[in-house]
Image (cartoon, rainbow, N blue to C red; front, top):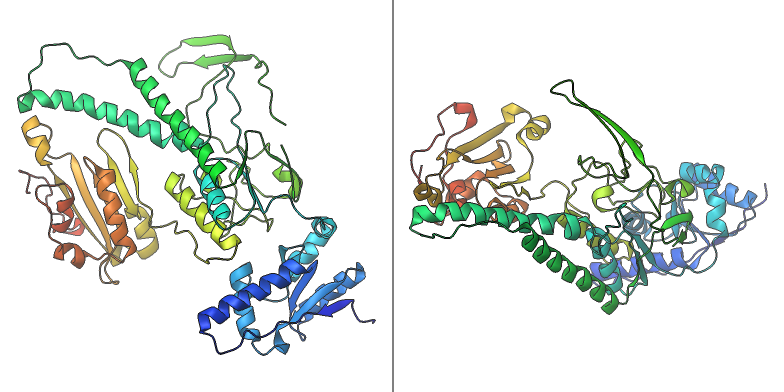
Length: 501
């Protein structure tokens, strides 16, 4: 058998005179130079049969490749360790084609069989952008800004398909336009209504009839949202990010088509609805049918099938690994379209920022999808961080957990005459890990503000003893977590008689 048309790559040793961290960064830079400077780069071991198969494949295709045999360099173990950090693959062969990580032996042969390898080999031209982001929501904007900070050329495509009545929104995604921001502002409006009712109990007298003007509220909120939309556009421009208000669709592995959609006229729908409480039936012809049951992942019309990205056919969401990588190595997904991950703005922002840092070699940190604080902004707020009681039992078993809980009566509710056993606090502790808090739950006023602080403590390894050792601020709702004594397993009564329990 003739020898393969492979060239031996050289990896000069960074030397031992530098501190190990500096030597490691230098090694990382040299490996990236090999990956980015060669059409086909194979990291191999001379005795590995799988590596031999891959070399023979490229030889049969007449493709010149570069090889670095890790067993034939002095610091091969260190090279493989850093290579694992770059590619998230621990084994050899480890193959890159035109800067794209293909994977190991099996994935390379699979790519050859489905035509992906040939497309990658044909892609010799320089790309117009280092990173293209489809979707200008919280995660996309975060990733774009971080990549731009790292000196990369970035484009953001964002387009909201208008409703049949022509309704659309600006840059910023769900959170800014129809999610977190308007939700919290409307929540505040509701709280002010409750406060008006409480005010009389606190001695406030007013004779004028108080009423709510919905139009005035929505106009004020929309005005604020508009200022945020404009602010995002200005920030992208200042950072040198190209923003295009158009619909993005994959047409090839590294090509995205930008076909602003026409508004057009909607089709007509015949609706037949039957009442669940009687024999009544409603029938009519409509332009629009609103089913207010949540959101769809808009992933089926952006050409993912053309490049082989897999989605969950049931919900349209995209499965990824622990570094947000799809089954197509150079395509990543973050934010609400991830399958099995929380749909939360701060999660998307953090994931986007960390992804940009990993992609461009300045960090290895991954997003923590477990200890995530969140709040439901109902009139009585609910905040949580970590595991639910059910999930904790599933993970740790019931006998290994201790659950501390209590009902409590906020002081500001006493004079107002609100119910004294509505608010609730609970922590879930792992008994065999120094009673580390693995779940935090709060139902009460300002639960979002309180939960945010305890979330930081949980990231630092909060335990029940640390809570007991903390002096509370009196009188506040948050102090209840410093005085928790009753366990669920004890079966003791948790109802309250006063503000201090």
